[in-house]
Length: 74
Image 1 (spheres, helix red, strand yellow):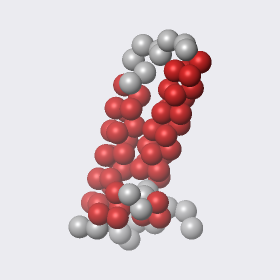
Image 2 (cartoon, rainbow, N blue to C red):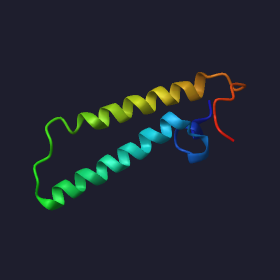
Image 3 (cartoon, rainbow, N blue to C red):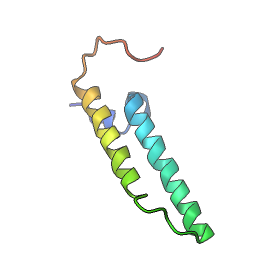
């Protein structure tokens, strides 16, 4: 099993990349909300659960997908 498919940017598929960027952007937004002293929206932390689910889905596709499938862009 090639564990670099979990963290190496060149080995991530689109689902994993979107999940990582989404989690980073959500964290940045949460930091800005706290710095401005505003109340965090109710259920905001569920967003991280959604990013995690998308990342896990992408990981499963990355590991168990057929390597000959050309669904990525060149």
